[in-house]
Amino acid sequence: MEERRAAQHILKAVAKRARRWIHAVEMGTLRRTQPVSRHWGFDRGTPVDRYFIEKFLQENGGSIRGRVLEVKESHYTDRFGTAVQAKDVLDIDAGNPSATVVADLAAADSIPSNTFDCFILTQTLHLIYDLDGAIRHSHRILRPGGTLLATMPALSRIINGEGIDYDYWRVTGACASRLFGSAFGPENVEVRTYGNVLAGVAFLVGMAYEELTKKELEFNDPYFPLLVSVKAVKR
View 1: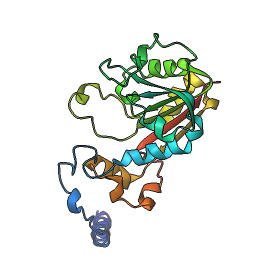
View 2: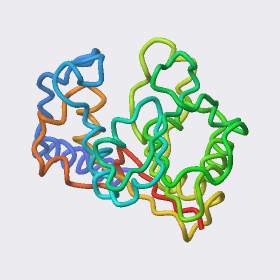
View 3: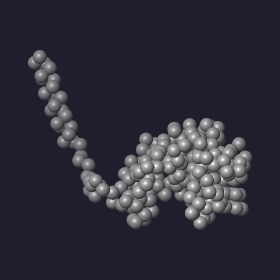
View 4: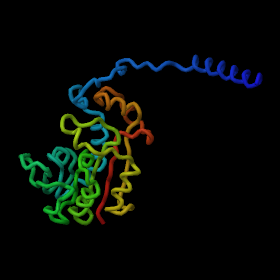
């Protein structure tokens, strides 16, 4: 009994000394229950996730060619396209004046098969409950040799307003590999993750990527992904 008490005393002493060696985390402006921005950081600059989305699209600009489909607008097609012959905009909302294709991607039978050479599908799939259906239609509407360039959040706040009811999914790289591999074939899918714990915290609280250094943004920690990108080719 005495030996047990002595051992416990020693352990407590060691733990107490160890706590002295651990530096307290300086929370600064992050010690708060409200974000610094409720608008993703747009009011401070550019949202952190956009840094990774645009990096992914720029690196794959050669695939943005021929007839290109993009969701809601043609901004990325115009910015990163390299040999675009025609561009279309997909939206479930017929009230979007930019939309040339009105359809629910999870039930897009109205879109002809083998139509597009590239489909830019950024930050959209997490808002569609039937992920499998949306991915299979994405494969179907591409021409043979066509490329899907998709991004999905691994970490993100819920969309303002009605997003509380229709913002469904966050995915990991492993999840994306399984989802897209089942439709395109695993050998035709390239999945990457982007981010680290600092980028993730900055994004959640609404900081802009301009408030981080390039070194902080470029450091990739696969255990703390912020964004998942998928390049899938229809063979």
